[in-house]
Length: 345
Image 1: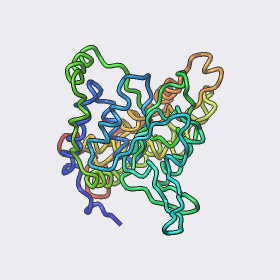
Image 2: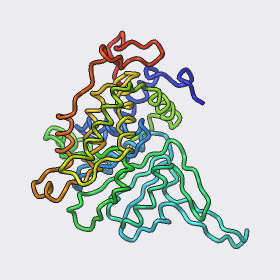
Image 3: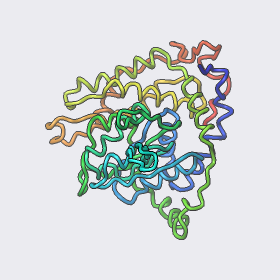
Image 4: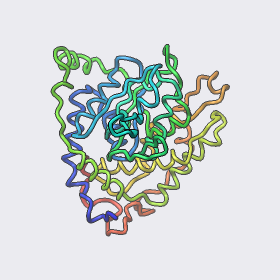
């Protein structure tokens, strides 16, 4: 069992995260908050769903994140004729050995890029369910473990676009967070013309971190402390989605777990070994909104899931400050606030 002393400290790993951040931001112009959320999901052992209109850099973001880490990367182009076996793999009869031989599919990689995931049928999308939740694949009654770290970065177009299938609720619930890249500012778009006008920066992008360094980062994030008031705050936020009149489907217990894990990663990115209510608030919309289903009346009133989450954040009381509740009490002699200003990763 890994102890706190065995893990690399957050300070020692600051340079690793900074290198990855700079590498990705060198490709994705003017979107630092999107890059930060992507790194948060990576360190929280989650999966990322990037949803936006075509041409804003969804696949570019996924590729830049994957190429910045020295690990195995596979890309799946989801199309209507894609089969589940194309993702998970298939057993093929070997004439010489007179036995079945398993041929791994594209899911057997540390970073899997699923491009336009909602262009495949729900049957094909369901091939990702086991791998995303249990990090394993079962074929013909035999279970195969997936490599670690393991992350699925999927892109999708809005469901209003032609030729798309809505993601099943069980599929959306397995994505820790959803992010929209959005259109760049005029300045960022001008800079993009200079950077991307000739050769794509992805062609020159080299790995700046190793997979074993990411594993150490993940171990460090696991050790981030979440005090009982912060955990209760996350539970109250998620619970409010289950009783809200504008929602016919609220967030699951898995959403609560993902929200706390993401808050721990956010705290680590801010150089803290303890999570604050601010970490939960900042991530609530990204982690919860894509799991919620508005009622028909709410849709007629043009109420979005994001608006509902924002309303819940306004109505739910925020826990007391760290000085009052001791959020920093890690059991390792860590004060309520660090002696030095937080060092951002």
